Amino acid sequence: MNDRAEKRPSWDEYFLMIAKLAATRSTCLAFPVGAVIVKERQVLATGYNGSPSGTTHCTSQGFCYPGLDSCDQSSHLPSRAVHAEANAIAQAAKHGISTQGAAIYVTLEPCLSCLKLIISAGIREVFYETSFNKGEKALVRDSFVQDGLVTLTSIQLTPEIAQQAALFLLNATSIKS
Image (cartoon, helix red, strand yellow):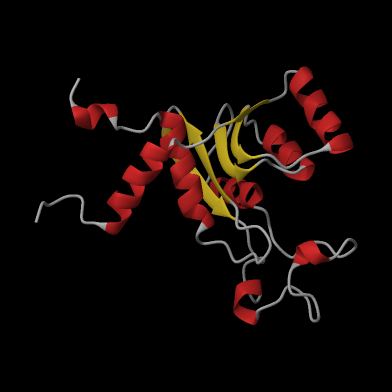
């Protein structure tokens, strides 16, 4: 096997990197999150979290609510952001793309609301980079897994693949200079 083939990202790493790139479009001040929906190794839709279409982005105004720099600073006000998973599912629906039997890759484990939406959209596999649900929320999440509605898998990029991706992003890749 040649050196180039050995450095090729796995499918999981490839799709996680796409989700991470989607997160760079996030307009959320608290948690930039990206998502990509995949079926048969093909990208169906991407999404990132941010204010609803047509509203002012938190990153543009510098705060989520007047007097509140970030939504995660409040225990009672809801986030203004539409979550990355919901945006990806909405994009697929908007374009008439079925998500039945698909997988979703996200940079942050889905909250319970998004997990229920994922299940309802027919997505059966969730791959995530960073854990989110704890305590009672984890119990509810685990009940969905035990009922066979969805699988959740934590995945990470290897440092070598992340470094290779950074080089590809920083340098021309198609033509050697």
